[in-house]
Image 1 (cartoon, rainbow, N blue to C red):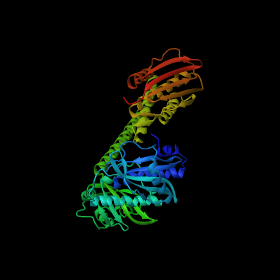
Image 2 (cartoon, rainbow, N blue to C red):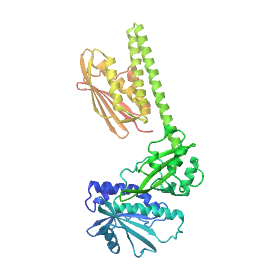
Image 3 (spheres, rainbow, N blue to C red):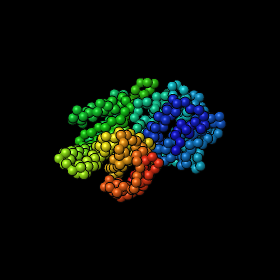
Image 4 (cartoon, rainbow, N blue to C red):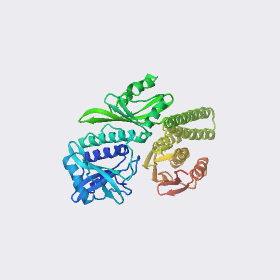
Length: 481
């Protein structure tokens, strides 16, 4: 899907500042469309007239445009109307409604101003097919939309500090609207807004009440007050915050209304996000519990490894010492995986860091008298947590096998580990420059590797002798199954 800048630049050059300004406007103009019960269309002037580069349909009323108009040229009869708004720098109302097929459309055009210069034209288009009664809600919604449209013509909207990010639970016009004056008194509250504050414990009307005073009476624990709350409920800053009281939680967003730099009031959007925040807290608690479990498993495994180390010191038989050392190494590898999982909230493990640590540990423990250089090529990428332990054990066993059997009688050697990732397919090659394989390994380590690769990872492996050493090639699937 093309961005606004990409669409606009198809019809003419656009500076970075202009692109950012138009992007900020379109990020927030859904609010204006909903307040105005109208479609909004952005136009840019081209040699042949005006072309539509963006549009927004209202969620509070019928749309004028059933089809997408982006990329279409304005009809010749509309060009003079659009150019007048661009040249005069003011909102221009159409004298007569235009007819689109079988219904009339009332259109207002206004310039989109940045730093005192008009860079585009915005049209507000309202279908005349639906007859609306002039209810109090409609009058206040349209009044608020007129204020924002006038701010656009003066270059005061969008607001640079406005929070338009993807935080869950962002309030919309349909969730609840309050209009405030310059000192934070409520001049209008929609029925949904009253219901939201009723859930917080506010009873009765909000009209002509000081919203900062109302909210301050709700918050009993002063230590938990968000420092942005006062600025939001007074309408002084285009920020967003949460207000919690009596077991309920409201998401609040303020948009200041200004006139030539002087703040005259604000629009406050509110939404009941009690259930959403409860679920978020449950997820945080669940994530913390899982991380703590991984941490405790890691500690227990390290304790087991320490016990195996103590036991190996009391054993004199070389075979028993070697078996205990191998068991200790395998337990330590699994502990590394759980240590990694305890430090992340994701279900994916950055396996490159984990593989590097496990391979270094394997090389050092397997043969302390041999200086082994491990070369890594390619990236493992992110591996699902359920496969991380098995894959780490496989890599560790293969590196250990190469060190123990490939460099017998040598003081140094090189092991090259190459990873190639293609979506869920992972191919790993482990090559050493040792004495090479005389036959396929049949020890416990090779049996463990074969079992893990074929049964746990659903892959395959091949052992082969190459010129100047040996190679083990692994192919596994590390996607969700």
